[in-house]
Image 1 (tube, rainbow, N blue to C red):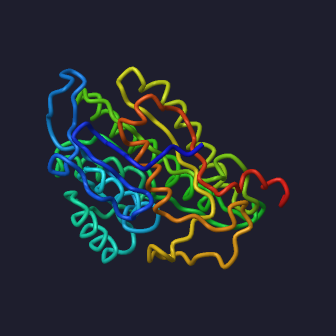
Image 2: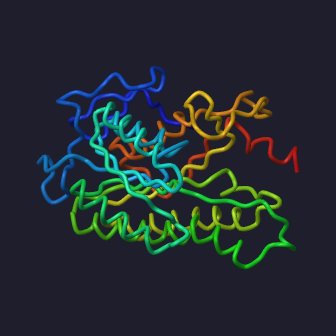
Length: 293
């Protein structure tokens, strides 16, 4: 069941994030989320920082704005559209967050950790990482080349491993705990015909999520995944077109901001006892998936 997102407090000084009233009504105490170090509970150390890969559009952008509304400073990466990234940065600033942006092509997998380090240095810390950037291809398995396979695996799985490792090492050094949230897909749970590397990468990212939850829990780092289904972006003005019809039980496609709201909740202290879980946001698609096989 999707949690109640009517009042999302990222840290004790943070106010509300209202799902019904896009955007949020604001936050109390000056509108900033404080980082509360594990070694000194109750002592405000700095402003909380989140980094979102692929944060210039779609679910990534909606997530970045939701986090800014919740009191975070937010670093985002972009691949192809710098104008969109600059626009997203302005939206983050309007929501009360301090933005930082970097170009990142995750096909060059080792660049992910380097860019994350640059954003951490600019913003001063990292408390939340959202691995959102992704890549897919549609091609029959019998016709697929190794390069096409590897390109999807690199972006969706290997790069997320490297950015998560870099973020977790910093969180451990900070002794402040943290949260890593991996944006997968309903295809973390069910296969997609004609997209073998995409399906494999999303299944793999779901498995990585659970493994990291086991290994990092003792450091106060929570790791979860969010698995979106059919998400429309017409209302949020982003690249993908809204499907004309939706066959899911709720009878409509989802809004990117609905996914962003869930991610903001997982980043908050209200989800402080949640780790190793995959949250499906699909309007009931998985319930009827077998009917369309």
